[in-house]
Image 1 (tube, rainbow, N blue to C red):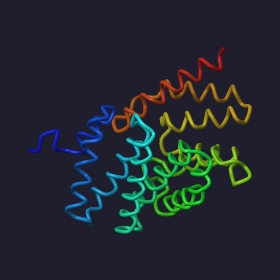
Image 2 (tube, one colour):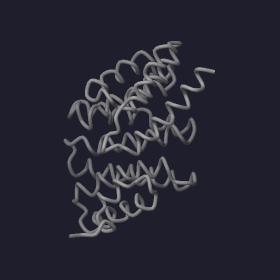
Image 3 (cartoon, one colour):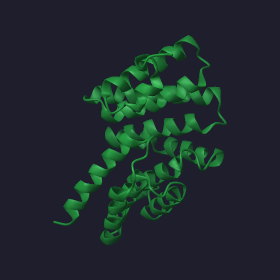
Length: 224
């Protein structure tokens, strides 16, 4: 049996420890280099690069991780274009690049992100418990109205995502931010309370911890 240090899935489960996330990435990268048609290694590499792109300590490292995640996602799509994994993780990595690195990046990727997420909805609307609707909800919130953004559509997609996972801390938090932008603060507070009340998901515990902290911080700010 492989030790935890040689098991990228075990290392990824411990991704809150950044060194383990980097080790998982290195192992999946090595698997992909050994077999360029390794679908599982490719999509899991794209996924861990998304995590690193949100958590590395320097801007250069975060950008490099996200660009590697996009590249890995493109390899996934090339291998199996009718599967949702590659399309979703391309969009996720591009989305963080768009949000984190200025207006030019946002404009560069906005159309591609939306196209990839809509492809996921066509292929498998329930993929990863409504993650495409969740991400599209964020897209409509983040993109200026002049370029297609819409808080109404953001709310619609986020509520659709909650139909797949009523306890999603991420969806409830994103919905709270959209509602604040719509001047519906009381509704937003109820969504933030749902983030805090949601049980931890074994697959997404690191993300749950982060969004519970964000919800706590935002609630405190709203109640001042």
